[in-house]
Length: 202
Image (cartoon, rainbow, N blue to C red; front, side):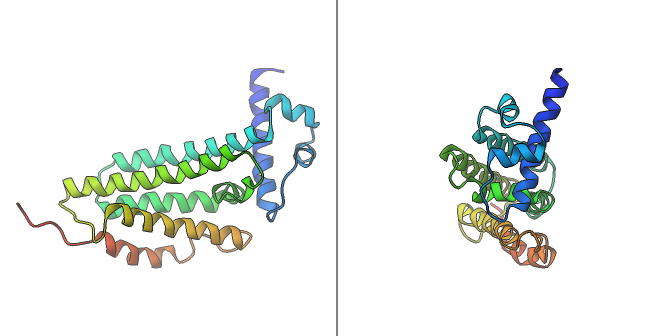
């Protein structure tokens, strides 16, 4: 088997796992069921991933790469605080909407009973997102003479918690209630907190 074939099989396994997570309705996925989905033996699965934990770890790495590559571009681009925060939060919602199975990983539901380090990776993912929002806000303080109505930590947490809640609702609805529903109507209410009074000139 060539290296290209190995990569293709790995991707096939991960795509099958994501699809099963979308259909699982909270049920734990076994390697036997995954092997049947991919039409290979369990031994074949383990030739590509030494454990199921490694499969979930690969999914988390995909989530991190997909999100943070784009977040880095948003943070580096020109734009005011509201535009940047909107772009980061909407990116997360769009990613969730397009990858329902991965939402079970992002909420931790799929990781119940799995290795604790996996849940730690998801915690770190959202901590990094919150840190990026704080960075945008601190940059606005310097470059736009903007002042937060509450502490930056509290405001960044509120913004991210709003988006996390929408993803949880998406999972709870078995992916019937898109996380993007009503977002464009609700965003202006959140954005109003990012239009706080500017600092007076020195």
